[in-house]
Amino acid sequence: MLLLCSEVNAKKKSILNSTFVSRCFTSGYFFMAKAPKTIELNNRQAYFNYQIEDKYVAGLVLMGTEVKSIRAGKVSFNDSFCFFDKGELWVRSLFINAYSHGNKNNHIEVHDRKLLLTARELKKIEAQTKEKGFTIVPLRIFFNEKHYAKMEIGIGRGKKEYDKRETIKNRDIDKDIKRYLAK
Image (cartoon, rainbow, N blue to C red; front, side, top):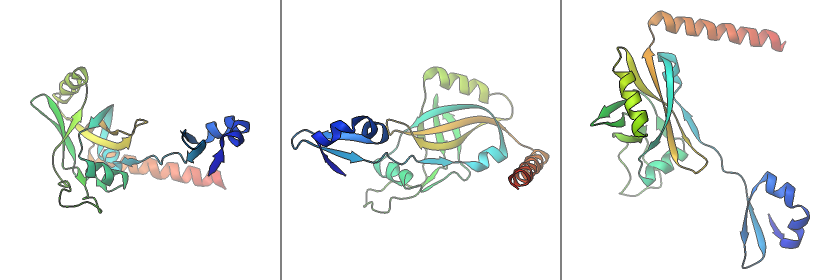
């Protein structure tokens, strides 16, 4: 949608509140773009297999084609986990599919990727994982308001088989209640 500056002044508040507006000063026109679509990829199995105690948001060190593949939603969390190596936190077995429009410089699909956290958070997480039964699991990948790729990680204990059955039972009960209330 293209508007003259004089037309926009009358509708300024409604336009600024509803869309992102960038100004082209040379031509005197406003170019309006729709709000960017938010990308959020969840690891649903992590919530089923682990009792999550604590959550942290970490930055990801990625190559350009990895970012493009994440924006396309081509990520698999199967068997991925986080570990410490020389005081740094890494995620292993995170599958990011090769970018479809990439060239010979495309990224490797499965390799260790570094997670960025503050030193205080790293020490706290490392102390928590030294307790028996705790592990670090990637929960979701998303882009923040500055368009940086972030990963939410959780510290949790593995669930026993009977805990998983109880989770399924509670989920079925909740579905039945919602179905009954909807009638």
